Amino acid sequence: MELKIVEMKIPEGANLILGQSHFIKTAEDIYEVMAGTVPFAKFAIAFSEASGDCLVRSEGNDEGLIETARENSLALGCGHTFVVLMKGAFPINVLNAIKAVQEVCGIFCATANPLQVVVAETELGRGIMGVIDGFSPKGSETPAQVEDRRKLLRRFGYKL
Image (cartoon, rainbow, N blue to C red; front, side, top):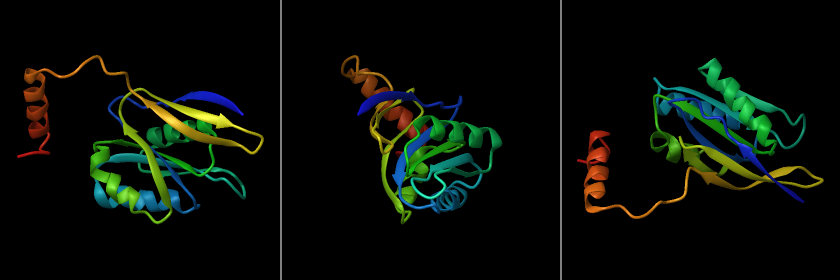
């Protein structure tokens, strides 16, 4: 077994969701979630098959995001995984709906941070071992930073 680090490309202003699924209809089903949950967002989905033709299947409503999602999936090379890229929406808007898709097994991460994926490669193929999402903590927040965080959440409309 060999471990590799794969850097994900996240376009400026976009967020990425990385997950595992198990069936060819993943790309279409997640498309329906995105279109039905955040209809004005730009998004793309790329799903890597693990059997049959073993192709990266992609859907979306933005060609640039579709191409980047496809590139990310090909770079990962891990079967039954999916990459969602979105602009004009945040993962918090769609995560529960994506998790409820019948064929979705789990979510590795949802982020706009720099993202590295730890991939194991064997004679069978490749699989995701984990993710490195952003940077390590530099300390604990101060009372002033607590207040700033709370104000930010209210500015975004997530709290009263």
